[in-house]
Image (cartoon, rainbow, N blue to C red; front, side):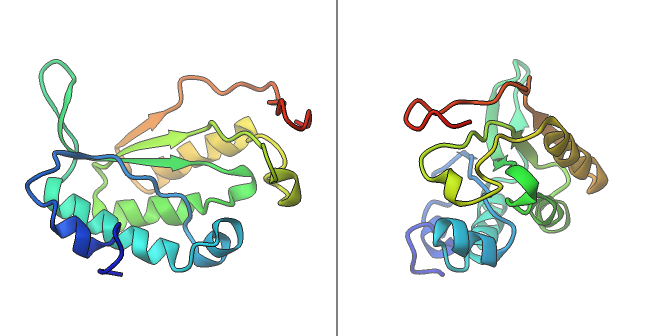
Length: 164
């Protein structure tokens, strides 16, 4: 892991250089990461990178004007039917990083390109699925989740395929 460009070894070289990290946590389990993104050992490598980033910059710190000055802000895209492994991602953040982690829980998933080949990725995220993800953040004691302002109920239609 340490020899990969995004691994902790490369990240250690940035210690003292980067003020704010804003990484994604895409998948909570290796099987799904391998199947959907062809990413071997994604959760393990991603978690090691999160630990290193947090070691360097800590929880996100804002100034008196609400401007981020230093810290970690994690992004997580919720996928239909729990495919992103949201609970595993949130549990990891709460137990191994910090319950004070700024977490952007994103609801923007829209099926496009070859998504029709990978049900349930062939449909938009349901409001209930997103609300469950927010509930999981609360369940795991994450105190700083950033929820999406709105979740549109209308299905997205890909201009390429015409499929929702």
